[in-house]
Each structure stands twice: as C-alpha cells, then as structure tokens.
Amino acid sequence: MTIMSHKDCEEWAAMIAQMQDDPSYHPTYNKKGIKVSKDKGPNDLEEQIRVLEFRNAKLHNHNEKIEREILELRNKIKKLEALQTDQFRNKGDM
Image 1 (spheres, one colour):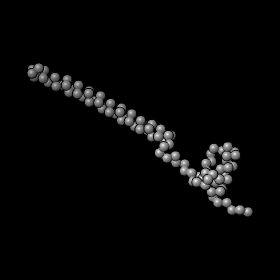
Image 2 (cartoon, rainbow, N blue to C red):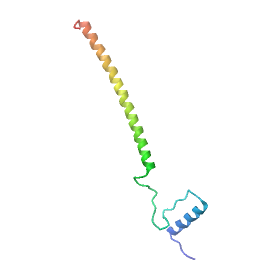
Image 3 (tube, rainbow, N blue to C red):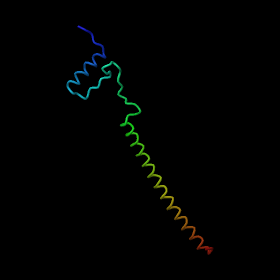
Image 4 (cartoon, rainbow, N blue to C red):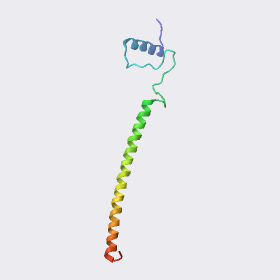
C-alpha cells in the first residue's frame, strides 16, 4: 500500500473527472505539479467587461443627475429673468 500526497489525490481526482467529463471539478495543481490559481489576473477579459459595464452604469447615472440639475437651473433662471423684467416694468424704468 502506498501513501498518496494531497497533490497526488487532486491529480487522481482530476484524471477521474476528465474521464467522466465532469466540468465542476478543477484541480489546484496541473500535470507538472505547479499550483494553478483560479484568479485570471488583470488581463481577464470577463473581469474587464464587468468593470467597464459598472463604470458605464455609474457614469450614465451621474450624467442624468447633472442633466436634471442643468434643466432645473435653466428653469430658475427663466423665472428670475421674468421676475426681474416685471419689477422694471412696474417701476417704469423699462
């Protein structure tokens, strides 16, 4: 009877999973014995897409907020201009 290390057990399980075509098992060591990380790193396109979609949504919301503020300020300016012209008309300066 031989004693298997943890790495050997994972390789054995990976080999069985490959034979059964089970995509749910992913070993942490490859065939050369190098530890494999599930983190794909900064060049992961799925992560970049997720980040860009998040930024796009936030910027879109911010843009809509600024647009509402601009429209409110324009309405206030129109009201103040109308009020000012009415004041001058009442005094007879215009």
